[in-house]
Image 1 (cartoon, rainbow, N blue to C red):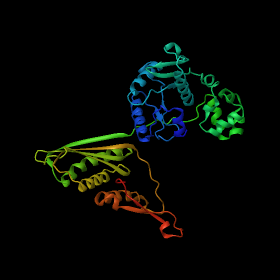
Image 2: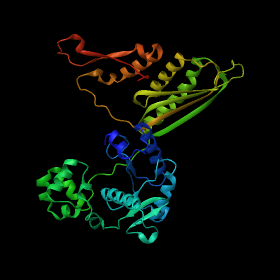
Image 3: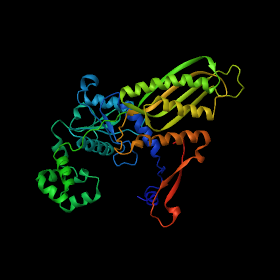
Image 4: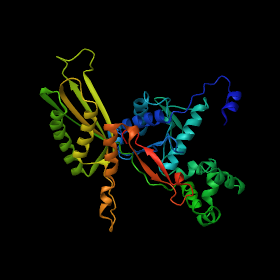
Length: 381
């Protein structure tokens, strides 16, 4: 809806500009908190994606640990209370689609006021667990639960919804009653998904969310070191240890964070006692030497102004390392990834605005200036 039209409809409303970064940060914090309840948590991390804001939690086998489903939902609601801008709604069903629809039904009924019921006796209806509307579909009752609901819930595609309405298929039960071949004949491959959802069948694989791992190590320096060469020896030990651990796990890191604690006993007043260097890496790596060289380049460009008494190294965004397919006839292919590291080090030494590369756009363009484009190295990347 255009902003002007929305303002005319609700002039007393407060309109906020979208902040995808803040939304993604809030969801990540919620996923990390949910990981303490269940090992199976899935969500769409991209704020611009259609499914953003929906989180799926596997509950099978958790009752001996957390109690009945209502109790677990109550605890989850309490855990998320300070992380999300408002209370979530919850749904439990036999399939992912059924659970999402149950959550939507719970939210709608909770907003209608008098029709909302609470208490353990409303297991087939809507209950409220710690302010979280909850709709539980009994095991094996997904088809009966979905049957009277609007068929528009089967797809986000407006064209598919319009076609369902044109064919007179306004309820999910009507779609489920048709032969699958008939639905596929009218809707193509999407028809198979529509019919499976209407019949209470699982259509999409569950892909658990994996929180990036963080690893940190620290070493005291006695006596404190005041030159970069002295720091190189300590940093080499930490980076090499991280490299061995990452390689043993088959993992790689995309970010390194270096913290220096300074000894200000004989330092000039006004110097901060702590220096933090947050360095994104040109590509995920498990090589400690590459991380060490990049951080040393940062220190050489801006050396500490007082002796360093403690050094802490942390690697973040640790994930399984991705393999690289090398060319059979080009021996240098494996070295092309090092260009990003060279550009990053040059940018740290001479300035990001002085380092870049040419990107070929159209080698057949008539004008020479249209054949390539100069790209700068920004932010150490």
